[in-house]
Image (cartoon, rainbow over all chains, first blue to last red; front, side, top):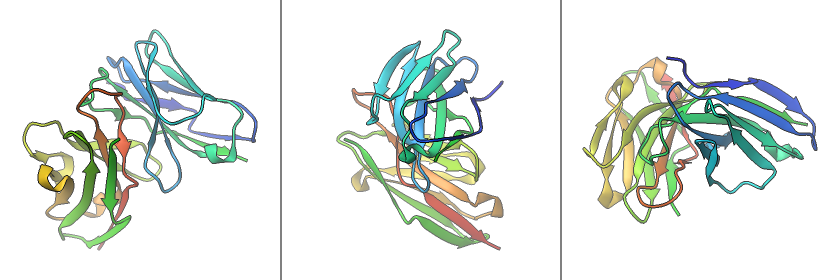
Length: 114
Length: 115
């Protein structure tokens, strides 16, 4: 069974640029959530996708957007990058969007904005 | 709104000693509770979760946690620390009532194990 994978592992961008991060969910999982983890902090919920529809969003501005594809893989897009966007971005998949369901995390993409 | 407080950003224990990592939650209804572990440069791995069944939950690697509603706590323990337990630990809460499905995490506790 393949776990959650993310690409790229590291990325360096400059302020104002746009970035796309990718996530492949675990086999059999139809729900993907994205989290931002700033240095020294716990992960913060960005949004969740269930069967290609946004199923909940945290307190992030609209320049953070996402997609989920028919194979349940997902993308996180961030426009107009700011220095504070530098963080580890974590993708997590689960078999369904039930609140007690375990979320399985990928290794993350570390984004540095200069 | 729900929140999680982890007391102590850094905890040091000797190898073989008891590990106790504290987590208190704030929620209008008893939530679902999770403990995750993060090793350096890795994602998060689930240790255990409470989903309103038994209040004492056993997880992987010898960890366990007890849900105490009266204290709004879900502390993580392990009887005997091992060097491989050195990592960062996150407590998280998910609402059990209506609402969006998301995990709210604490700020984490970094566990150091002294040989």
